[in-house]
Length: 417
Image 1 (spheres, helix red, strand yellow):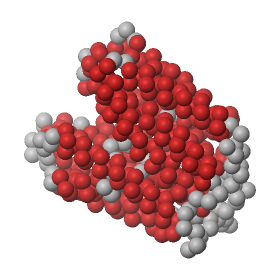
Image 2 (cartoon, rainbow, N blue to C red):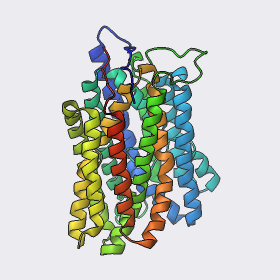
Image 3 (cartoon, rainbow, N blue to C red):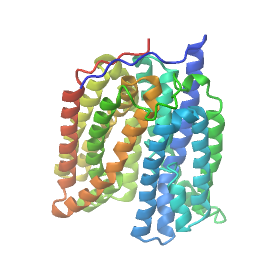
Image 4 (cartoon, helix red, strand yellow):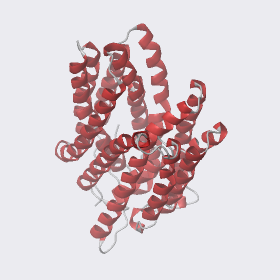
């Protein structure tokens, strides 16, 4: 599959370097605050839904609404985002996050929770791929023109998410811990009011971004679909990313906790520490990904770090005891997410600046639309053979790596001139 090099459409300012770095710092700050509150909320939202006595079906409705909100809002951002303006829409989505988080903090009424989830701004994953992330992925290349600069920028962007998300998840145990000493503390769900506080702070930061982050060329009224030159390439990437995400759905974090407890009797506390360590490893590997991507290329970084991590995934269920199984899992976490910054930089380097919002939105949407299907099939396979989800996930993801390399190895990328 061939793709022409992107045309230079980036806005240029007399002090472009200084303006770009300032914009990057603002986006990093928003990412840090969002990851912190998402990591915090990932624990508290689940715990509070359980404490409210919701059935599995009702919790499933809420989670499904989050995914549906991600899909609908991301497609809307990809189709209309550059017409509205990236900065304007960015600030609006962050305010929407503040409002949606307030709903989870103040009520257990199911219809209200579902409506809040449908905004696409509430996530239980610190490094989510919703409409806010899609906008950030489109703006980062404008602030860091050139493949080398944007690869480093995406590496730092993801490292911040993993690190602050881990800190947020760890902090979620704070309310219950301090309630032992201060019984009068508010209910744990009230601490979700961190969402409006952080959402408002993020919106203020977003309002300070420069015009440099906008699309380089205005979409005309006659151009009804935002992808033109790169439509075929983006469709191919979206299909492959969907296959990778489907494979990842077999072994989501909840399943891993269940599996380790079933197979080895691992406690929740042990698995909490494991995933905290995993977050630190992923943060470090994201930084390493930026360095590696600029030396061996983005596609090679995506494939040749992802491939061995999937081999390790297949090995996990065949370990004889808890210690070796955790060691292999952590080794896998140390390299499994190195493809993420490279993947994000690759997508936006393949398309023109005015197609970046759409390209990021559509490839992200493809990833999380199919993930629940992988989780459902993984649950079925577990009943047949406890190791089956690991083997299935690793096999699908290895196939993805090989097809990705074979399909896109001749695509030539160029930075903004």
